[in-house]
Image: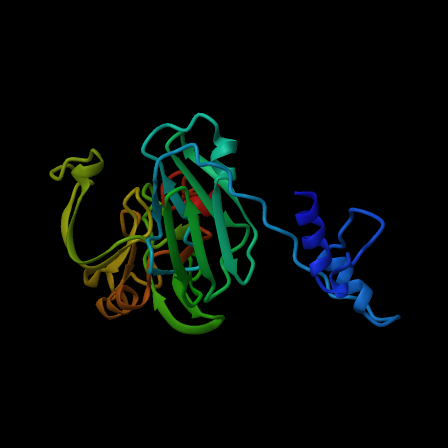
Length: 289
């Protein structure tokens, strides 16, 4: 055995001697780079290693927006869990939100089964976003910045796309007693046509303020029932008098344009009304929190 060991030791070439004799330390890749860099030149730095992802304390949740969607600049990320989350901090650590370009934001909890995340300001247009929450992943895109401002002082709606005015519309807000709340709304679902029924929020159809009205081109702005929709019966009031029950009334032409151009997640900013502020927990009122 001793002879065999000697034979093996002497069989290798002379160049096989240790590269760094005299100690066990082997230089790191970064140290090698620094040793090969000419004097006076700053050596390149290797990126730090990413921390390992912590185990998710939840089963695969649902993520909204869904994979492949294109949404507006006000759209929050909504993560719904299948079970109540006891350790919210651990859940947040297990969620990865990556964006290009980088965007800062924050988590906020609607309940023990739902957490939301949104940027501190509206998303930059055309941002690419990926959400990884446990075994669920969604990659979606922020589209153009279509921002709508409805001003009660002028009773006019102004729509900009990436900062350029693309549409102005006379409108009628909620009449006294039904004043449209101020605040930033988020576009939700859209209906080519629908019936609006006061009984859905406790006002009988046959009461003095009751109604059941067929409307076209209805774009939801709040879960509490505020829409921007075509209202040909109030065209004479649009731009000068508030006559609705809270919705933004516009002409059929303008309602159709908004229905075709607005997308989920686009902001609608209502200002200068006597209606207080939209509840931040409306479901589409996140920017009022």
